[in-house]
Length: 311
Ligand code: APR
Image: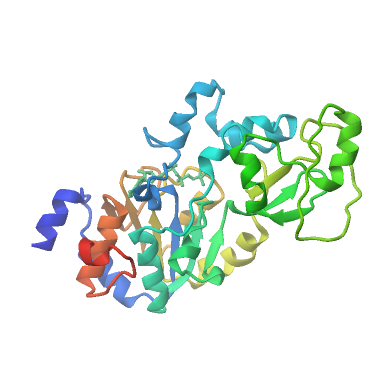
């Protein structure tokens, strides 16, 4: 009965069925979970490349490539390209999806090796997934840094500026910037930055001089060092790779599927097929539905407030 019901909701690919995944799940002890924007869309957070995705919403900006809003070189030339849209990607608080709950369930069962997430919404933390078990491959809004002197501060200190479409300015560099841009009257004041040492280096008076940027990984920036520290060992240690809610379009995260040893089974849980990658198990459908089906077949409970309605 479950299969029949969920087949109407899940367009199961003709290669595999959930049972193939359930069997692998029971045997796995070191699952590497790779997630993308699709795991948060049921919360109303758009993904990037779907027809209703974020990039389609900013098409009106007339950028050659909508990804330019997250391009580091463009930010340095003109930070307003990002700050005109940053309010649209500010992370929500205290919510997580059944799929986030599913990952937490894997952690509780001692099966989660690591969750490599491409998302910057930090929702894994609200689901209770240990920070040690999460690698935010594309950074997050948790902190922000000055693009000139690299002074760091809690990310939420600039949320008000972001909501007011204002450039958040570094207090240390501001004074220097005032010489370059005298009509900039607003002197920023951040009371509790993270690093106390007063930075010295000052670059040329670019528009981005002394502008603070959330520590999300822009195109053209290196991924957080934690990614490089853990990925090599995790690739060799994992006994199952599960990719969820991602188009696998952005390297180096998209290359993980090619780095995992060939004997390690690879599972895709996604609304749309990912044509450029080969999976042993393809479960095409909404990830919350797939997670529900799998948990039911394993007689496991997903730690999520809607679990009793979902199952
Ligand atoms: N259930 C399952 N899959 C879903 C759901 C859902 N509810 N909603 C969307 N998807 C799938 C889509 O079919 C798509 O394949 O999630 C995928 C989202 O793909 P993208 O929008 O490309 O997002 P993502 O893969 O996370 O993008 C990677 O690109 O722009 C950069 O830094 C940004 O981290 C992001 C990176």
